[in-house]
Image 1 (cartoon, rainbow, N blue to C red):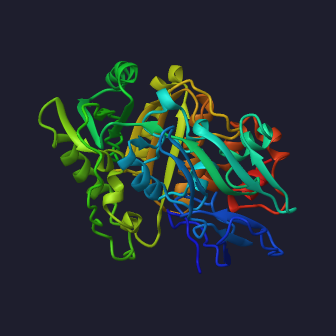
Image 2 (image 1 turned 45 degrees about the horizontal axis):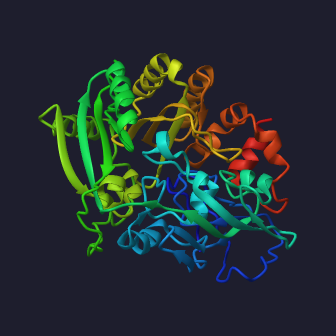
Length: 434
């Protein structure tokens, strides 16, 4: 089997061993290995092309669910989508969820995923009660805030490098309905975005903004800011009959995301909302997971694939750094119709390498153009570092390894927890950046 990154840019890993039982010892593969979830990491932090992938999708069983207290224990290969199908009809929800429900619980831990509610809930790792870590020496460590706390902190956001998580126990969030009361407002300047964000994070649980990242030399910060809250009037928790969305059937030889298509799409999308403010009640699925409605959407970028640049910069530096980042993207003709802007709160993650920190985060998907894209990432990294920010290893990959190393103060402490058998293409790039 061939294992690809979601961006399909990195060399695939061709050798894998599928795990089917959490109580069995790790296989002796005789080469470097890395645990594999559902392959939604965009770059090479989730790939070991020079060794073996330990495929965890077979670890897909639920172990225990306390529906009174909202405590779930399951194996690491369970998808968040499967979790939602079990817990939502019983009045519970994920405390933190990324923009796709097709990631495994183990993957959510390894990347310490964040969502639209970081200002209130922090990262996924803050809601973990315990997990089991399997090491290549045969040891099994039960880790939690009070038990093996060092391993707990290193594994959360640790990119799978401390060993393999076999099961995890998660504290859930109570809800009364599947519905979300959502409000969307337009903004046309960065100052306007920041003002809206300040008001929204103080009053609402979920906030996010779509940004018009059309390729243009003149920087223009405009987009749609959305906030939302779970409906609290008992509108119902009954399971809906979900229909699989359309799928992009294949990856064409070239990218369908071009400067022209991006500019046309973003202009139409920005003006689709005729009123300055719109309000609606929606099901949680399209609110949290709009891209999941198009299966295999990554194929739109064609065989060359795509990369995402995601960074976070301190709030005090955002006024200078964000226009500089967007200006550099525009000058390179690297437009995007998948650009997200949001704010992070000051709640620290328990993970040593976790990405979120207080400030403003920008995420932009762009078609891969080989060395041109690598040079662009280097220029963006320089702006991010100068602003006192950092980059997201699950998205940026080896193209930003040096920036990751320079902006991650806990890296030396983390190195002591790395399993000697674990490696990845990204980790080798980080080590080479010394």
